[in-house]
Image (cartoon, rainbow, N blue to C red; front, side, top):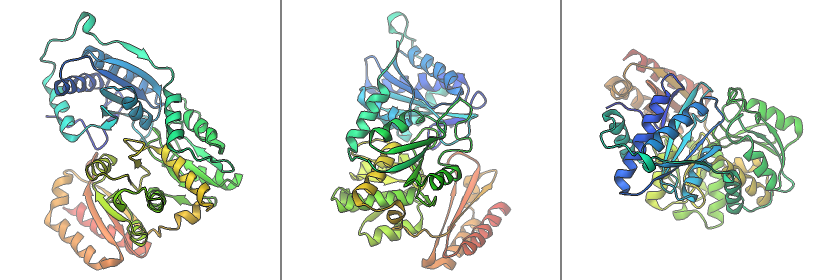
Length: 445
């Protein structure tokens, strides 16, 4: 069986790895698998995309795949991934399909699938879809009235904005914001949202042409946002990625406020208001050790998962918790979202600034980040290399050397033939030296 799904859906070079034929196969297989679980009845799917030019091509293929399997399709156009997840639930749909490669460069694209309720598909369902793709269509195809129908939904963006403003009604009046939309899916909706919330908004990276998504802008390219914040004397900057499921920020001096710091601010705010379930926040193994120290000092417990917001969400649901996220800027508030929502995160971060009367720099100072170095090593067999005795011994030696002053994490990439070596230490030089030492052993295996 081929492995089509990575840590966040099916992703690859559009019209290269991710062809229209594959998109059609994934969509029709997903509809058939969900039908086999849900029993008889007509399925409804919601389909959205980010601003990539290839999304137009792949949308057509996905719609063909879904309708050929008898599913009716609601097209919502260019919207953020969290909007697609919300609308899948709001419309009572059986399936949501988002065409996006998130923060990846423009030539890539991806297919993210959501089940009823707007939740990402479990690993087991993805595995069933992979089997279905490889085995081909073995049951009779719908014909006549059994073929799915397609309709465009005109008010999707307005409905999502209303949901966000209801979820965070605090006025942002008096807050001066510079917003970077990455020329992506939030380019129209995010500026309008923050302005409706009361902020004074200056926008950059909000002129998508199908080819410029994430190109020198967005959450993976913070420098231009930081410069604009300083030049305009703004209170903060907010950066989204191509599909706006992430939120990173910069303070008034242009200093980065990363996902760990944003999560810590939100966790402490909820904790102080009595809204942090079980006094626990969920994060991944990539979270900086400084985050853990900050949460311990605030009296908040930390539950750690593997890398990927889907695993954060699984832990939140399994334990009945209210908040989790990743260093990359995915933050999940289970009272109002079923996936990482960069727009909701930004609203709640700015709301905390307003209600506390504190600057973003003051709020972010709760986390004292340890210097962190990440080295990606290309290998031929990532699982074999990561599990080798030599590599494991090198990791153990480095961990012993660091003691309580840092940590080392080695893991295979979820999407590429890479082994990632991450070291945190009490100085950048120490972190870099240990990371490179272990990386050299990885290369030699």
